[in-house]
Amino acid sequence: MAFKYRSITKKDVGTSMSSINVTPLVDVMLVLLIIFMVTAPMMQSGIGVNLPQAETKSTPADEGLTLTITADRYIHIQDQVINQFLLEQKLTEYFYGREKKVVFLRADSEISYGFFIEIIDIVKKAGIDEVGLVTRFPEEKRKR
Image (cartoon, rainbow, N blue to C red; front, top):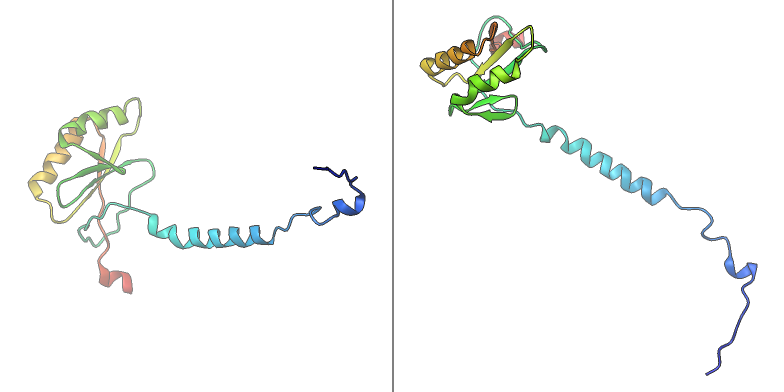
């Protein structure tokens, strides 16, 4: 078995790989960008609450904490579900050391008035200064 040694010349090396073709990379990145742009609005998950209607607008300010009460009596602090019996402790911990203590309640219109008052009572026991109620503007007023 004979092995033949051959020297490599400049002609053998060539220049075919001296630059990278970025066109396929750009194509793939644009497709991914379009996919993320289409799916991003669908990924926004909020807590579905049927807010009661009111003639005046009420939107929560940036400086307070929003508590959401769903129709099946689940209490959410931002996106986290909280037990009713631990709510006072969680609110006390959240507002510890803060001067202004403001809570905005987003309650479903289907919950009972008694349960709503229980939650407000727990919020007041936690030392909250102000409690705001979030409502939605009536549909016929928006169209004008």
